[in-house]
Every structure is written in C-alpha cells, then in structure tokens.
Length: 283
Image 1 (tube, rainbow, N blue to C red):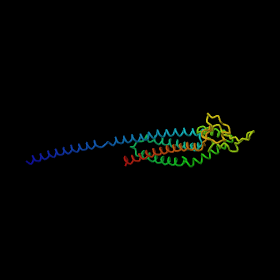
Image 2 (cartoon, helix red, strand yellow; image 1 turned 60 degrees about the horizontal axis):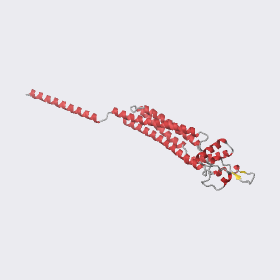
Image 3 (tube, one colour; image 1 turned 90 degrees about the vertical axis):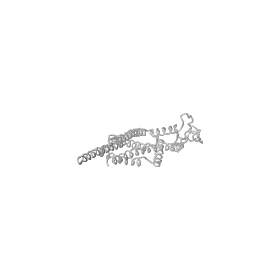
Image 4 (cartoon, rainbow, N blue to C red; image 1 turned 90 degrees about the horizontal axis):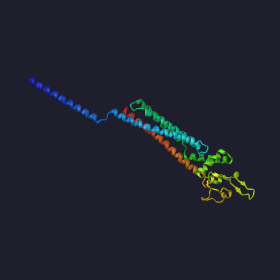
C-alpha cells in the first residue's frame, strides 16, 4: 500500500508540474504577442528620425539656393535701395540654410541605437540652434534701422545723381520705373536750386525731372506741366519712392525673418526629438 500511494503521489506531482509548465509557457507566449518587439520599435523610430532629418536637409538646400539667388540679385547695380542690408541678410540666410543641410544630412546617417551618435547629435543641434537664433536676432535689421538706412541712402544717391553719377542715375531710373514713383518724397526733389535753369526768353524755371518719372505712354515732359498743380490724372508719378520702397523692403524683411524662424524651429524640433530618444532608449 505504501508503495502504491507513493507511486500515485509521484505521478500526480509529475502531472501537476507539467500542467504548471504548460500554463506558464502559454502566458509567456501571450505576453510576447501583446508587447511590441524592441528591435521592431527601434527600426520604426529610426525611420522616423531619418525622415525628419531628410526633410530638414532638403529644406536647408532650398534655403541655401534661395540665399545665393538673393545675394547675387541684390548685388546688381539696378538693385533697389536697401540692397546693402539685403546682401547681409541673404548671406546669413544662405549660411543658415547650409548649416541646416549639413546638420540634417549627418543626422540622416546616424542611428538611434548608438548612444554616442545621439549625444553628439543633441549637442551639435543645441549649438546650431543657439547660433541661428543669434544670427537672426542680430543680423536681420529691424524696421526702424531699415527706415534710417534707406532714407540716408536715398538722399545720398539723389545728390550723386544730380552730380551726374552714372551708377546712381541707373539705380534711380530702375527704381522709379519699377515702382512708378518719382523722387524721395515727391517729384519736387528733382527741383532744388542746383537743377533749376532759366530759359533765355521769359526766365521760366525748369526742373530736371528725369524721364523715368513719367509713364512710358506719356508725351508731356515740359517743365510748365510739372510746375502746375499735379493731380493723379496727370502723366507723372506723383508718389515718392521712399514710402513705396519701404513697403517692399518691409515685406521682404518680414518674409526672410519668417524663413529664418522656420529653420530655427526645424533644428529645435529635431534636437528635442533626439534628446527624447536618448532618454527613452539609453536610460
């Protein structure tokens, strides 16, 4: 009897052990099926990280090319007033675009599996972010500074044009024809004493208003029409170039400043994402 019960107990214990082993293995299998695989998750996150850097690299290349185009466009003799400020702005714009492209291209080649690479990316992104903020804050002029610089530049250029400077005369011709304006404030800027002549008969005053102050279809360019009361129907550009030029410059400056802030946001987002991945996968 003792041998029988002993054998019976052993068989029960064996069956119980097999049952527990089966249940535990079944639960482990269920847990594995419910939770995502770490390798698969890292591959997905790495794909997202590379996609972000790929988009930023393409954006940086576009901004770099745009900065180069603006730089060479505003270096022309016929460029608008305020071109000196835009040469600096376009240089900063292109430099930020090149920095964004290089930084994002290096990030595209990195992987989230490497702690060292992610730390270098996060540190580099912080430095690039700080440099871009400093460049946009200090090198892109404010509206007040632009007002003073353009006003001084236009008055100096007008004086040199009256001295028969060919370069500044070409600039005024381009600006007045393109903006449909005349003079700094109005056409009377061309009528100072140095530009007044007297006809041999009648001593009638004549203003040296350039032909670029008149529409192309205008045939009335005599001085008497200019000296009379001007209304908006006369064939002469009534508005001065200063206000119109400032409208164009203010619009362009605001546009370039917005693009600069966009590059800063892209760098900041990519850097923050890299710091987040470092904290999650390498803690």
